[in-house]
Image 1 (cartoon, rainbow, N blue to C red):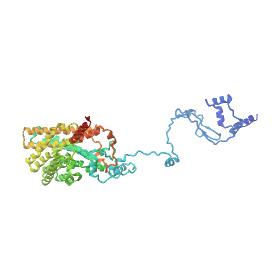
Image 2 (tube, helix red, strand yellow; image 1 turned 60 degrees about the horizontal axis):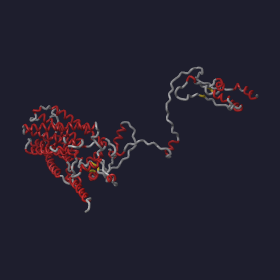
Image 3 (cartoon, helix red, strand yellow; image 1 turned 180 degrees about the vertical axis):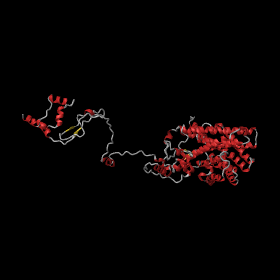
Image 4 (cartoon, rainbow, N blue to C red; image 1 turned 90 degrees about the horizontal axis):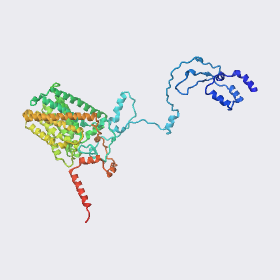
Length: 582
């Protein structure tokens, strides 16, 4: 009874929250709770209830939160004060609030104060950023310093300083012979290793060789041929329009601009790769190709573009050729690893033909002493090279099938030399005819060997067909002007058609392999050799158990007749040793 009286005296002091809960039952909550109490559950003791009533709370607001972000029942939510003296501002309990769409934005979880300390103590792994492959840095100009400067100018933040890989000043020439094999020194020996990854494709500029200028030689020589067909009296019956020469010359200029721009980018960003090509005993001959291509463009200049060429341009074009000749010809006769008997290759004709092309252009411009000088230098060294290549010393390896087209470079020098001497002397005399007949003999001696030029895949070496064949056709047109008859006319037309079909067929094939198949420029193994011999020999363990198809094909490519005889002798000896004893 006392408890009841006390409750009655305290009834006026019950907060509004208790009165609101007593008046409004929550479905699903108060029903279950009351049922539990009515069913004999634990009941609230009077002392505990009295303590709850007398307990003082700080003013606070209770907001009913939805169980999920979807389907928020805003129309049924109410805000209730725990004390009567707390006034709810801006809220009308009887007013129905408007329903508005609620957006929930994800926020990052703070790492806390101890995250960095845990990482520093090694208790939490730090996630490192994916770094670029730094194995190409040794070939980059200043280890990519220019690339970082360009990125800074474009507004990109400067990244971490790359690791500068030490490299030797000049790769010794003996390393090319020790690490590479094959007639063009482009195949890596089994005991050697590369400084660049061999399991993936390198950047395009690293795979872009200087031999790409051979394409410019083939197309620009076509402009010269069609200029002669249009202007020659012996071929006037063909009625060739001068516009053909103009179109081909414009194509040649555009092609040379693209090829030269790509190689200039390689020179800027990968100077070490260009330097290794320059010191390569065979690849250095292709550094004549850009200047010879420019001479071709000057010779094939259409009359509608310009009728004359200033003399200083000839000296500008011949100066780099002269500098390269002083270096290479001096190495041929000075001995050592770069002597001619060791590096003799049909590609060496590229270092010879520039003399005669320069003499041809200079004589057509009216110069006298300069063309004769280069003609004399060219004829002397061509004689030495011709004899060396014909002799085929035991130190020279047999060319594989993939390089058989370079044999057509034998035709290029005598063909151009006959026209150069005709311009110097003023007529196609006996000296010019001797060189022309030599070119024709070499041409037909190669043409009849059909099987010699079959059975190999496409490569840039195929462009060795184009320039010599076109040169032979131009020389035949010049000869037809001196000796005009039905045979020479037919010969001129036939050689011109063959050269034209060959050039345009190779041009289309090159475009397909470059942009469709994308296999025109494989990894350039010749520039990626190490500067010292590896201490450990690899790839020999699996060779003891068996050879792959690639190894067998490589062996058969360079096998000689003597090797076959030795193999047969060994087999015969094995048969005799296995014969039963009497």
